[in-house]
Image (cartoon, rainbow, N blue to C red; front, side, top):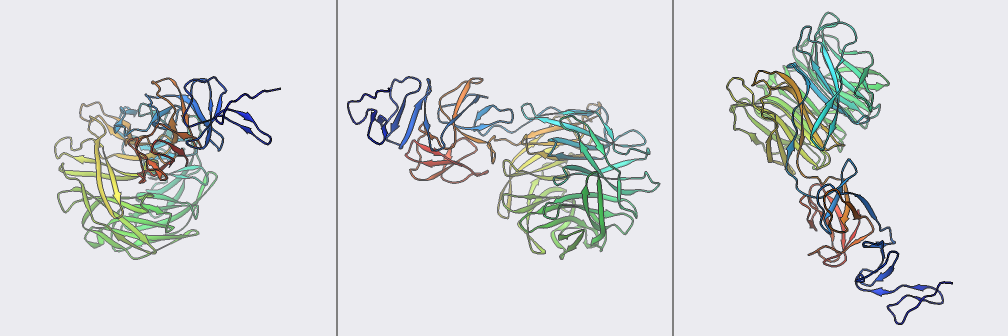
Length: 547
């Protein structure tokens, strides 16, 4: 039978109704694998695994993985998409080399992300007659900021007429990707929508039968957003056959088919140029931003409410009393507001941005900032949201005014505080000039943005390629793992203390306070962006890890 031997209160003993573990205020200097003691400083059991002491019980534990980069004892740790672990750090903003998908300069470009297959879907107008639409599927690799592309698939299964892609939109309910384009395949230009199925884990795509959503004529500059409450695709466009009025239509995806309700008009005073749309999950509304040619070409926005296959609108509001070209809009979940970007054609063609707040059927606006004024003009603007870092990024192509007339695709990372937006950093994404035939999307699994369009037009080797952009820090909303249990070198097997464990390698903590991990790897009692809980401080050097 086991025998417990002890000479004092700090030794292990067998009592009449319990077992008493040896009690100490710190880890013993020497130990053997399997030793256990009670730590009187933090009130928990510690076990020795042959190399280190770690907390046991109360949900505590540890996780072992290969270290990517060096880890210091007590440093906050994130888990990477490849299963390795890294120290939380404000890593440098970076982008990869051009990932070419065609050795020619494409026409129109539209790109989106299929979340079920975890693939990028790119639709382009091929530059050779008859300018047929083609679709590429790609997979993003975060480690080197690259895209690997599959072979092109024809967008139209019959006919050889020109196709101009406008938007690639993902429907999470059906787990399908829908591509909007206009085409003259029936003898006159019409707006089409086709449902695509991405064949993951491969790089192929198949299509259902294209459906016409604008029968009268060209559905110019179509944009779309998914409404998760109504499970609908909401499309907006300029109706070239009806005075350029702004139109909207609601679609429902079932299998490989999309069906539509009636068409509704949100602007009938003149051409509604570049209509773009975003969804507001708090208000359960959509916000449409456009240039209103019927009102001095002012930048204008209007709120829409979807009900079944119908949509109704509030009153249009002007957000910029200037000629606002290349308007676009996206929703920022962190602040619950919409970021609108545009080119101010009245004032030197600079790039401008502002925040919009939806309340009921109305929209109000914050102050406007200039995000780019160092070039002769700004090309297309594309604001997007990084759901991992809780940051908005505006992509645009500044124009030089020379020949060729376009500079590098540029990313403007935004800081947003309520109704106020400012630019935190600006990064030109390549060394060869692009033109305006580009679009951008976000990969939430690899936490990377992907831009695609024409490339290399300066040196005469025209091509079309994608560039992957990493906005910076590696701390996301859901990848914090815990604290490194010791110091480890790159490639070593590292032990990470996880939720329920107590890390004792901290300094300067506020006892009894909840602490948050910051993007630079420090801890603070104030939440950062993104807001990531580290745990509660037991002493100035010990933290109980929690979510």
